[in-house]
Image (cartoon, rainbow, N blue to C red; front, top):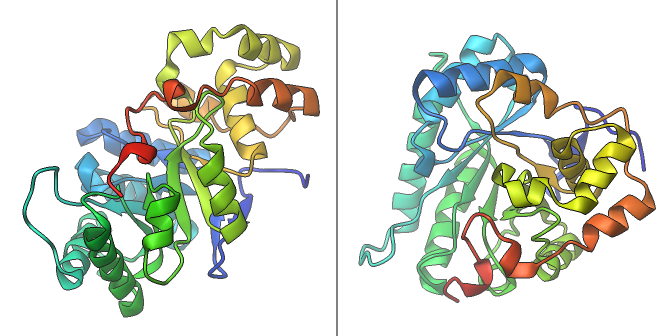
Length: 291
């Protein structure tokens, strides 16, 4: 394995690159969100993940602008939000594209008027195959217009991915950590060249997970924190983890992953923790979302 650094990237099948580590901003709103994003960027994170559902795209844009780091050096990912369960509304591709563009306007807090998105995802595969096709065509239209560089999906299983019209998604963002490894869809995406972003890589700091004897043992072996072990596992699996925190101390700690490496035995033991759907902490199970 080549030596990883915070500047390391992964090649997308489109020819562009995505940073190997991102900062998750889920539900970090108001000044807390602004400060967290600003601090993350100043600390060295090169990617920020947000979503329309989080209602914090303006805060993310403000934090990036306040960091003083040139926009060209930052990778911004956001997610278009499908209609809620039970809605009878069926957005056309043109509507999806227009709604996606609102994210660009919210994120452009520098006043440049030249904002763009490095990556935009469909947040989940609801409501059904026809809806997903229309949503995907909408993002493809945004990409064709040039203000979205790459497009992808989130929480999509194999059936969802196979049913999509072209182009092939660049990214699939899933809950991924040792207790929830989603091996079938991970293998499928890997074979297709779809990069896997990992949300909830720190299992929401769940006490039962952070005190798991296997993880604690490996952390002691490397004289690292449990969070470091979980994030390093994600990196070495080839995923793109996006840990979230509003704590300046944790923001800094979560990126200190590059002065050690998990060995074969460590990875085998962590791989052995997989609990399938029972190991989820997000409550989102792509296998049981509508086909």
